[in-house]
Amino acid sequence: MLYLFGKMPSDSKKKREQKKKEAAKNRGNKKPQNAETNGATNGVSEENGVDDDRCNDVVTDIKEEIEALDIADKHRSVTGVLVSHPDSRDVHINNLAITFHGAVLLQDTKLELNVGRRYGLIGLNGCGKSTLLRALELKEVPIPDHVDIYHLRREMPPSDKTALQAVFEVDQEQSHERLLDIYEHLDEMDADKAEMKASFILHGLGFTKEMQQTKVKNFSGGWRMRIALARALYIKPSLLLLDEPTNHLDLNACVWLEQELKEYKRILVVISHSQDFLNGVCTNIIHFHLQRLKLYGGNYDAYVQTRMELEENQMKRYKWEQDQISHMKTLTFYFPSCGTLPPPVIMVQHVSYKYADDKNYNKYIFKT
Image (cartoon, rainbow, N blue to C red; front, side, top):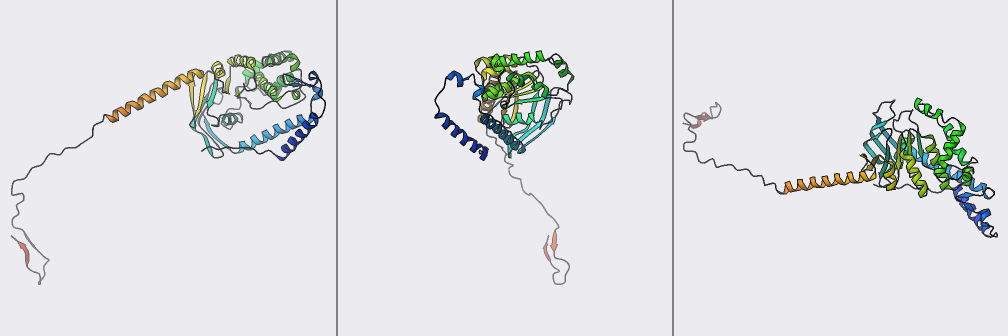
Protein backbone atom coordinates (compact mmCIF):
# COMPACT_ATOMS: atom_id res chain seq x y z
CA MET A 1 0.00 0.00 0.00
CA LEU A 2 1.35 3.44 -0.94
CA TYR A 3 0.91 6.40 1.39
CA LEU A 4 1.16 9.96 0.09
CA PHE A 5 1.47 12.81 2.52
CA GLY A 6 1.15 16.44 1.53
CA LYS A 7 1.30 19.72 3.44
CA MET A 8 -1.32 22.41 2.94
CA PRO A 9 0.00 26.01 2.94
CA SER A 10 -0.71 27.94 6.11
CA ASP A 11 -2.68 31.18 6.24
CA SER A 12 0.46 33.19 6.97
CA LYS A 13 2.17 31.73 3.91
CA LYS A 14 -0.84 32.60 1.74
CA LYS A 15 -0.66 36.21 2.96
CA ARG A 16 3.06 36.38 2.19
CA GLU A 17 2.46 35.03 -1.30
CA GLN A 18 -0.18 37.70 -1.87
CA LYS A 19 2.23 40.42 -0.69
CA LYS A 20 4.89 39.10 -3.06
CA LYS A 21 2.49 39.30 -6.00
CA GLU A 22 1.54 42.88 -5.11
CA ALA A 23 5.19 43.88 -4.71
CA ALA A 24 6.08 42.30 -8.06
CA LYS A 25 3.21 44.16 -9.71
CA ASN A 26 4.41 47.45 -8.24
CA ARG A 27 7.97 46.82 -9.37
CA GLY A 28 6.69 46.17 -12.87
CA ASN A 29 5.35 49.73 -13.05
CA LYS A 30 8.78 51.21 -12.30
CA LYS A 31 11.30 52.12 -14.99
CA PRO A 32 13.99 49.50 -15.61
CA GLN A 33 17.45 50.37 -14.34
CA ASN A 34 20.92 49.32 -15.33
CA ALA A 35 21.40 45.57 -15.11
CA GLU A 36 24.78 46.05 -13.46
CA THR A 37 23.17 47.94 -10.59
CA ASN A 38 20.24 45.72 -9.73
CA GLY A 39 21.39 42.47 -11.34
CA ALA A 40 22.64 39.35 -9.66
CA THR A 41 25.95 37.58 -10.24
CA ASN A 42 26.26 33.86 -9.43
CA GLY A 43 23.10 34.00 -7.35
CA VAL A 44 24.26 37.02 -5.24
CA SER A 45 22.04 40.09 -4.99
CA GLU A 46 23.29 43.62 -4.37
CA GLU A 47 23.04 44.58 -0.71
CA ASN A 48 21.06 47.74 -1.50
CA GLY A 49 18.53 45.62 -3.36
CA VAL A 50 17.91 43.15 -0.55
CA ASP A 51 14.34 43.07 0.66
CA ASP A 52 14.15 42.50 4.39
CA ASP A 53 10.59 41.23 4.03
CA ARG A 54 11.83 38.61 1.56
CA CYS A 55 14.51 37.45 4.03
CA ASN A 56 11.92 37.24 6.77
CA ASP A 57 9.67 35.22 4.49
CA VAL A 58 12.51 32.78 3.77
CA VAL A 59 13.23 32.38 7.47
CA THR A 60 9.54 31.82 8.18
CA ASP A 61 9.31 29.21 5.42
CA ILE A 62 12.30 27.36 6.87
CA LYS A 63 10.73 27.43 10.32
CA GLU A 64 7.53 25.98 8.90
CA GLU A 65 9.51 23.21 7.19
CA ILE A 66 11.24 22.43 10.48
CA GLU A 67 7.89 22.29 12.26
CA ALA A 68 6.55 19.97 9.55
CA LEU A 69 9.55 17.69 10.04
CA ASP A 70 9.00 17.68 13.79
CA ILE A 71 5.36 16.69 13.27
CA ALA A 72 6.43 13.93 10.87
CA ASP A 73 8.94 12.65 13.41
CA LYS A 74 6.12 12.05 15.89
CA HIS A 75 4.47 9.61 13.49
CA ARG A 76 7.62 7.53 12.94
CA SER A 77 8.43 4.45 14.99
CA VAL A 78 11.96 3.02 14.96
CA THR A 79 13.35 -0.05 16.72
CA GLY A 80 16.74 -1.74 16.58
CA VAL A 81 19.44 -3.45 18.62
CA LEU A 82 23.05 -2.22 18.78
CA VAL A 83 25.33 -5.25 18.35
CA SER A 84 28.65 -3.44 17.92
CA HIS A 85 30.74 -2.51 20.98
CA PRO A 86 29.46 0.65 22.72
CA ASP A 87 32.92 2.23 22.48
CA SER A 88 33.48 1.24 18.86
CA ARG A 89 33.49 3.79 16.07
CA ASP A 90 31.57 1.33 13.88
CA VAL A 91 27.77 1.16 14.04
CA HIS A 92 26.11 -2.24 13.65
CA ILE A 93 22.36 -2.48 14.22
CA ASN A 94 20.27 -5.66 14.02
CA ASN A 95 16.50 -6.14 13.93
CA LEU A 96 16.05 -2.65 12.47
CA ALA A 97 12.43 -1.72 11.78
CA ILE A 98 10.85 1.59 10.74
CA THR A 99 7.16 2.39 10.41
CA PHE A 100 5.70 5.73 9.33
CA HIS A 101 1.99 6.46 9.77
CA GLY A 102 1.45 2.72 10.07
CA ALA A 103 3.26 1.92 6.80
CA VAL A 104 6.16 -0.51 7.23
CA LEU A 105 9.33 0.86 5.58
CA LEU A 106 11.88 -1.53 7.08
CA GLN A 107 11.33 -4.80 8.88
CA ASP A 108 13.75 -7.13 10.67
CA THR A 109 16.85 -6.04 8.74
CA LYS A 110 20.41 -5.09 9.66
CA LEU A 111 22.51 -1.96 9.10
CA GLU A 112 26.31 -2.12 9.25
CA LEU A 113 28.36 1.09 8.99
CA ASN A 114 32.14 0.80 9.33
CA VAL A 115 34.72 3.56 9.68
CA GLY A 116 36.52 4.37 6.46
CA ARG A 117 33.63 3.16 4.30
CA ARG A 118 31.51 5.33 2.02
CA TYR A 119 28.02 3.96 1.44
CA GLY A 120 25.64 4.81 -1.38
CA LEU A 121 22.00 4.35 -0.34
CA ILE A 122 19.81 3.50 -3.34
CA GLY A 123 16.21 2.43 -3.80
CA LEU A 124 12.92 3.37 -5.41
CA ASN A 125 11.57 6.88 -4.82
CA GLY A 126 9.37 6.91 -1.74
CA CYS A 127 10.74 3.68 -0.24
CA GLY A 128 12.05 5.54 2.84
CA LYS A 129 15.70 6.44 2.21
CA SER A 130 15.40 10.00 3.57
CA THR A 131 13.34 8.71 6.50
CA LEU A 132 16.16 6.33 7.38
CA LEU A 133 18.71 9.17 7.35
CA ARG A 134 16.42 11.29 9.52
CA ALA A 135 16.10 8.45 12.05
CA LEU A 136 19.89 8.10 12.14
CA GLU A 137 20.31 11.85 12.62
CA LEU A 138 17.99 11.94 15.63
CA LYS A 139 19.57 8.72 16.98
CA GLU A 140 16.20 7.03 17.15
CA VAL A 141 18.20 3.84 16.75
CA PRO A 142 20.72 2.96 19.50
CA ILE A 143 23.79 4.85 18.25
CA PRO A 144 26.53 5.56 20.85
CA ASP A 145 26.72 9.14 22.13
CA HIS A 146 30.34 9.60 21.05
CA VAL A 147 29.33 9.21 17.36
CA ASP A 148 28.57 12.76 16.20
CA ILE A 149 26.24 13.02 13.21
CA TYR A 150 25.68 15.74 10.63
CA HIS A 151 22.74 15.44 8.23
CA LEU A 152 22.60 17.79 5.26
CA ARG A 153 18.92 18.18 4.36
CA ARG A 154 18.23 21.90 3.85
CA GLU A 155 19.96 25.13 2.89
CA MET A 156 21.65 27.55 5.28
CA PRO A 157 19.10 30.00 6.78
CA PRO A 158 19.59 33.67 5.80
CA SER A 159 21.74 35.65 8.23
CA ASP A 160 24.06 38.66 8.43
CA LYS A 161 27.13 36.41 8.63
CA THR A 162 29.37 36.14 5.62
CA ALA A 163 29.64 32.82 3.83
CA LEU A 164 33.15 32.37 5.22
CA GLN A 165 32.04 33.05 8.80
CA ALA A 166 29.09 30.69 8.48
CA VAL A 167 31.47 27.86 7.58
CA PHE A 168 34.37 28.13 10.02
CA GLU A 169 32.17 29.12 12.98
CA VAL A 170 30.22 25.84 12.71
CA ASP A 171 33.10 24.10 14.46
CA GLN A 172 32.27 26.03 17.63
CA GLU A 173 28.77 24.52 17.58
CA GLN A 174 30.04 20.95 17.62
CA SER A 175 31.32 19.07 20.68
CA HIS A 176 34.20 16.67 20.10
CA GLU A 177 34.24 14.15 22.93
CA ARG A 178 36.56 11.57 21.40
CA LEU A 179 40.29 11.91 22.09
CA LEU A 180 41.01 11.31 18.40
CA ASP A 181 38.75 14.21 17.44
CA ILE A 182 40.52 16.47 19.93
CA TYR A 183 43.95 15.65 18.47
CA GLU A 184 42.70 16.28 14.94
CA HIS A 185 41.30 19.66 15.91
CA LEU A 186 44.29 20.96 17.88
CA ASP A 187 45.96 22.25 14.72
CA GLU A 188 42.70 23.71 13.45
CA MET A 189 42.03 25.84 16.52
CA ASP A 190 44.16 28.63 15.08
CA ALA A 191 41.84 31.19 13.47
CA ASP A 192 44.01 31.65 10.38
CA LYS A 193 44.09 27.93 9.63
CA ALA A 194 40.37 27.59 10.25
CA GLU A 195 39.60 30.46 7.90
CA MET A 196 41.98 29.06 5.29
CA LYS A 197 40.33 25.65 5.45
CA ALA A 198 36.84 27.15 5.15
CA SER A 199 37.96 29.32 2.22
CA PHE A 200 39.40 26.26 0.44
CA ILE A 201 36.11 24.37 0.76
CA LEU A 202 34.02 27.33 -0.42
CA HIS A 203 36.35 27.87 -3.37
CA GLY A 204 35.94 24.25 -4.38
CA LEU A 205 32.16 24.70 -4.34
CA GLY A 206 32.37 27.69 -6.67
CA PHE A 207 32.63 30.70 -4.32
CA THR A 208 34.93 33.51 -5.37
CA LYS A 209 36.74 35.67 -2.79
CA GLU A 210 34.11 38.37 -3.14
CA MET A 211 31.29 35.86 -2.67
CA GLN A 212 32.94 34.46 0.45
CA GLN A 213 32.70 37.90 2.04
CA THR A 214 29.04 38.31 1.06
CA LYS A 215 26.32 37.97 3.65
CA VAL A 216 24.41 34.70 3.64
CA LYS A 217 21.05 36.43 3.28
CA ASN A 218 22.13 37.86 -0.08
CA PHE A 219 22.50 34.41 -1.66
CA SER A 220 19.82 32.40 -3.41
CA GLY A 221 18.59 29.10 -2.04
CA GLY A 222 20.92 27.03 -4.21
CA TRP A 223 24.01 28.89 -3.05
CA ARG A 224 22.91 28.72 0.58
CA MET A 225 22.66 24.95 0.09
CA ARG A 226 26.32 25.03 -1.00
CA ILE A 227 27.17 26.86 2.21
CA ALA A 228 25.41 24.16 4.22
CA LEU A 229 27.40 21.53 2.33
CA ALA A 230 30.63 23.42 3.06
CA ARG A 231 29.78 23.40 6.78
CA ALA A 232 29.34 19.62 6.68
CA LEU A 233 32.68 19.12 4.95
CA TYR A 234 34.39 21.49 7.36
CA ILE A 235 33.49 19.72 10.63
CA LYS A 236 34.03 16.15 9.30
CA PRO A 237 31.62 14.33 11.66
CA SER A 238 31.93 10.67 12.59
CA LEU A 239 28.80 9.95 10.55
CA LEU A 240 28.08 12.23 7.59
CA LEU A 241 24.65 11.91 5.96
CA LEU A 242 24.17 13.58 2.57
CA ASP A 243 20.83 13.62 0.76
CA GLU A 244 21.28 14.50 -2.93
CA PRO A 245 24.34 16.76 -2.41
CA THR A 246 24.88 17.37 -6.16
CA ASN A 247 21.43 18.83 -6.88
CA HIS A 248 22.59 22.47 -6.64
CA LEU A 249 26.13 22.03 -8.00
CA ASP A 250 27.55 22.70 -11.45
CA LEU A 251 29.90 20.28 -13.18
CA ASN A 252 33.13 21.72 -11.72
CA ALA A 253 31.72 21.71 -8.18
CA CYS A 254 30.50 18.10 -8.62
CA VAL A 255 33.96 16.98 -9.73
CA TRP A 256 35.58 18.78 -6.78
CA LEU A 257 33.08 17.31 -4.29
CA GLU A 258 33.66 13.82 -5.66
CA GLN A 259 37.41 14.16 -5.16
CA GLU A 260 36.89 15.58 -1.67
CA LEU A 261 34.58 12.79 -0.53
CA LYS A 262 36.93 10.12 -1.89
CA GLU A 263 39.31 10.98 0.94
CA TYR A 264 36.67 10.95 3.70
CA LYS A 265 38.13 8.74 6.44
CA ARG A 266 35.06 8.30 8.62
CA ILE A 267 31.55 7.04 7.79
CA LEU A 268 29.70 8.52 4.83
CA VAL A 269 26.15 7.67 3.75
CA VAL A 270 24.97 9.45 0.60
CA ILE A 271 21.76 9.37 -1.40
CA SER A 272 22.24 10.27 -5.06
CA HIS A 273 20.67 9.54 -8.44
CA SER A 274 23.98 10.21 -10.21
CA GLN A 275 25.60 6.90 -11.16
CA ASP A 276 28.89 8.61 -11.99
CA PHE A 277 28.97 10.24 -8.57
CA LEU A 278 28.27 6.93 -6.80
CA ASN A 279 30.96 5.22 -8.88
CA GLY A 280 33.54 7.82 -7.95
CA VAL A 281 32.74 8.10 -4.22
CA CYS A 282 31.26 4.88 -2.81
CA THR A 283 33.06 1.80 -1.55
CA ASN A 284 29.78 0.00 -0.76
CA ILE A 285 26.17 0.13 -1.93
CA ILE A 286 23.15 -0.34 0.36
CA HIS A 287 20.07 -1.42 -1.61
CA PHE A 288 16.77 -0.43 0.05
CA HIS A 289 14.40 -3.06 -1.38
CA LEU A 290 11.35 -4.98 -0.16
CA GLN A 291 11.63 -3.60 3.40
CA ARG A 292 15.21 -4.86 3.66
CA LEU A 293 18.71 -3.38 3.46
CA LYS A 294 21.11 -5.47 1.40
CA LEU A 295 24.81 -4.60 1.38
CA TYR A 296 26.95 -4.92 -1.74
CA GLY A 297 30.70 -4.40 -2.01
CA GLY A 298 32.19 -1.97 -4.52
CA ASN A 299 30.77 1.05 -6.32
CA TYR A 300 27.55 1.33 -8.32
CA ASP A 301 28.86 -0.51 -11.39
CA ALA A 302 30.05 -3.38 -9.19
CA TYR A 303 26.60 -3.48 -7.56
CA VAL A 304 24.87 -3.70 -10.95
CA GLN A 305 27.21 -6.49 -12.09
CA THR A 306 26.79 -8.45 -8.84
CA ARG A 307 23.01 -8.15 -8.89
CA MET A 308 22.83 -9.25 -12.54
CA GLU A 309 24.90 -12.33 -11.71
CA LEU A 310 22.70 -13.15 -8.71
CA GLU A 311 19.52 -12.81 -10.77
CA GLU A 312 21.03 -14.92 -13.55
CA ASN A 313 21.98 -17.68 -11.09
CA GLN A 314 18.53 -17.51 -9.54
CA MET A 315 16.91 -17.90 -12.97
CA LYS A 316 19.16 -20.86 -13.79
CA ARG A 317 18.17 -22.49 -10.52
CA TYR A 318 14.49 -21.94 -11.25
CA LYS A 319 14.77 -23.44 -14.75
CA TRP A 320 16.63 -26.47 -13.36
CA GLU A 321 13.91 -27.08 -10.79
CA GLN A 322 11.19 -26.77 -13.43
CA ASP A 323 13.07 -29.20 -15.65
CA GLN A 324 13.34 -31.71 -12.82
CA ILE A 325 9.61 -31.42 -12.16
CA SER A 326 8.73 -31.96 -15.82
CA HIS A 327 10.88 -35.13 -16.02
CA MET A 328 9.59 -36.57 -12.79
CA LYS A 329 7.60 -39.88 -13.41
CA THR A 330 4.21 -40.59 -11.91
CA LEU A 331 4.50 -42.57 -8.70
CA THR A 332 2.41 -45.79 -8.72
CA PHE A 333 1.99 -48.69 -6.27
CA TYR A 334 1.44 -52.41 -7.31
CA PHE A 335 -0.06 -55.00 -5.00
CA PRO A 336 0.09 -58.62 -6.31
CA SER A 337 -2.97 -60.88 -6.06
CA CYS A 338 -3.11 -63.01 -2.91
CA GLY A 339 -4.84 -65.95 -4.69
CA THR A 340 -7.45 -68.33 -3.20
CA LEU A 341 -7.18 -70.39 0.01
CA PRO A 342 -7.96 -74.14 -0.14
CA PRO A 343 -10.96 -75.36 1.96
CA PRO A 344 -11.64 -75.59 4.75
CA VAL A 345 -10.69 -72.10 5.71
CA ILE A 346 -11.99 -72.40 9.36
CA MET A 347 -13.15 -75.57 11.20
CA VAL A 348 -15.25 -75.25 14.38
CA GLN A 349 -16.25 -78.20 16.67
CA HIS A 350 -18.35 -78.57 19.88
CA VAL A 351 -19.77 -75.02 19.82
CA SER A 352 -23.03 -74.07 21.53
CA TYR A 353 -24.91 -70.82 22.07
CA LYS A 354 -27.99 -69.85 24.07
CA TYR A 355 -29.47 -66.92 26.04
CA ALA A 356 -28.93 -66.43 29.76
CA ASP A 357 -30.37 -68.96 32.17
CA ASP A 358 -34.11 -68.47 32.16
CA LYS A 359 -36.93 -70.91 32.51
CA ASN A 360 -38.72 -69.43 29.55
CA TYR A 361 -35.62 -69.42 27.36
CA ASN A 362 -33.74 -72.50 28.44
CA LYS A 363 -33.13 -73.83 25.01
CA TYR A 364 -30.07 -73.75 22.85
CA ILE A 365 -30.24 -71.59 19.80
CA PHE A 366 -27.26 -73.22 18.25
CA LYS A 367 -25.49 -76.48 19.19
CA THR A 368 -23.05 -78.81 17.45
